[in-house]
Amino acid sequence: MLRITDEERERERALFETERRNAPELFVRPPMIDDDEVLRAVGIGGLPEGRPVAYLKLMPQDFIVEEMDREGKVRAAAAKEDAAAVPAEEAEGNTYYADLVKVGVSTLEAKDRLAHALGIEGRNIGFAGVKDRLALTAQAISIRGLADGGALSRVNEENFFLRDIRRGKGVVANGDLKGNEFTIALRFAEPLSGTAKAFVEEQLAIAKEEGFWNFFYLQRFGTPRLIAHELGRLLVQGKYGEVVKMFVTHRAPRELPYFAAIRKDAEERWGDWGAIREMLDRFPYHFGIERTFMARLIERPDDFLGALHEVPDQVRLWFYAYDSLLFNEKLSALIRSGEVPLELPFLTSFDKADWRPYAEYLERDAVSLPARSWRDFPFVRVESRRCVTLQSVDVRKASFEGNVGAVSFFLPKGSYATSFLMNMFSLASGLPAVPGISMESVDPKAILGDGTLAPVLARFRTVLERRQADIDAGEGGE
Image 1 (cartoon, rainbow, N blue to C red):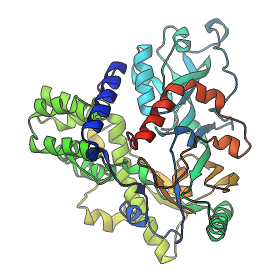
Image 2 (image 1 turned 60 degrees about the vertical axis):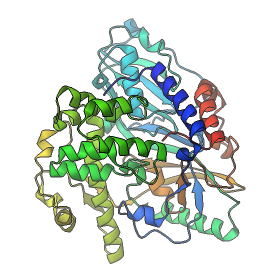
Image 3 (image 1 turned 135 degrees about the vertical axis):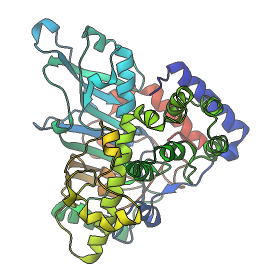
């Protein structure tokens, strides 16, 4: 994927602000509330009725994710002290480990930026799970191929820092993750009524005792456009040119009209890769994947397979998004039938038994298996895997007093916090915010009596001030 410099990010931000002032109507969209109609579009059904609206992620610290490893050690986002690096002569092994604490970037972007800062390949950085962009997260990473371990302590990025640098053997991989600790602020347009509060507390108690339906939530499907599953379907069908075209040109209701207009222009000039690249270059961060596609197609016109190979992390997510859509649709149907097995398989498997639950959906989508694309993209994991349908949750604490509540809980790996919360709330996010919610800065750790975020928030002051400016203006990037 094309590298984006800090200077390009700043130029893009300045252009965004200028364009917003010149044409404010193109930067307006309604608040994004994930009601039942939106959820049905990604296969989710059968949730309790009467869920009050709760707004998430006004500020990154409203949504805290802290990894727990297999031994039960939690990577704390708000640790008071940064442990010193282990000197090379006092430890064995060719791997450096660290805790990555970040806001305002996804794990994948942080990995790419860290690799560039260290002068190594991105594949030399290992992690156990992808964490959200608009959140405060902490996770373990491993770094190999590094000649000078001291370079880690010199990393200076406004969106992330490294803590507890150490040296050893092996790498961090998916199997090293037990789950995640979540601490989440929930904002309401008005304090929950007695009836609403009783409903939420009842649903919390049911989830704690029995578990919750383990649907894949919207972030699995590529917010805000929600097309990742459609891209995955096209990949399984082997329609690589259509994948690239849909990703570059598709307009969706939740996307800002300004960027949707650029996509429309790109569609009208499809095939003129240089002209499209010129349009996209004005916003190199927002259109990072699209620009990567164009760079490949300028060099090798119509090499759509090669273009997709330039973004392997995204391609994997698109395959798995289609798996997730079918999982959601099947689980919804089973809930309606009253007979739900403990697990369902994923489609991306060479085992024919894993395909059978989805036969009617595969016929609907004109998908034939095994898919040639599984071999065309060797970096995609194709093997028999299963996912629980009813997920356990360990609810730690909850408070729903006033306009801002908070809840903390632990989920095993592979489960989404939003999948849990949607059983109690109709969730909303993005800017503009739901009218009437509190816009004050809050500390969900403090609300629940679990310490304070003050030290780590001071490290991210610049990023948080920028987010506050977006909130004040009524809009922000996705």
